[in-house]
Length: 341
Image (cartoon, rainbow, N blue to C red):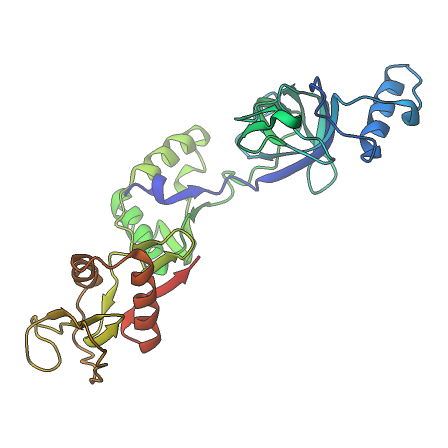
């Protein structure tokens, strides 16, 4: 895989921006009187427009107070547009058809980095109501304003000619980081050009570019093209809610015999034979279970592919497979990290 697909150049720190604002133009689905802050914000807005309004006298249902969030990256300059997300703060029933009034977005340091406004897209609808019932699709009290934010302040960039380039791995792994550093040195013909700082970062020197400021972009573009073979950890991920089972490439199972429900399964050792000297065996026991206790052959490491194929042949459900994998992990026979979601 290309380094571009395995890591990103650390250009600077991304900032999470937050703010609050008003959504107007709702069709009677806005905040009620219990959300007093909404009417206070509306009164404040009117006051800035030179209109005196008492918040207690406001009786409307087409306005909603919302929280606004966005993420600002170091690559975005002043004037760049970003997507913003809005979510209802009060008791509004829907933001469908609403428009966000101009609001400011602040960073963790309290500085204003962007402004936002525009029509809201909720990706759904909320129709009907009352005795006739209603039809609803997706969550209608959250939405987004595509390209609704305008950057007014940039973040600080870290890549300069007096510093080295740091590649941040999307999935931290010691072996992959080591291979990446070696591949970079081999590609550019300099053995010490890159070094793995830890499992999640690789540092690349820029000494050769000190006198060529315009060459850094081309250098990083060439750096992203370098191909590396990533290493994948032995990992099994199961989702008990959906019955999903994901088995990694390097997962293996020690020789073991087990019983589950009406199934009796022997997982073969090295050479296709189980620990008793016979061939691999998968059979059903209609009457009762006979758990088989055996010693493990540590040197025998069949893959889980064989296990799953045999169980699928017997029509084992995904939930049964999850139980079997959990039991194998408890027994120490599953040579992988088991992650349960």
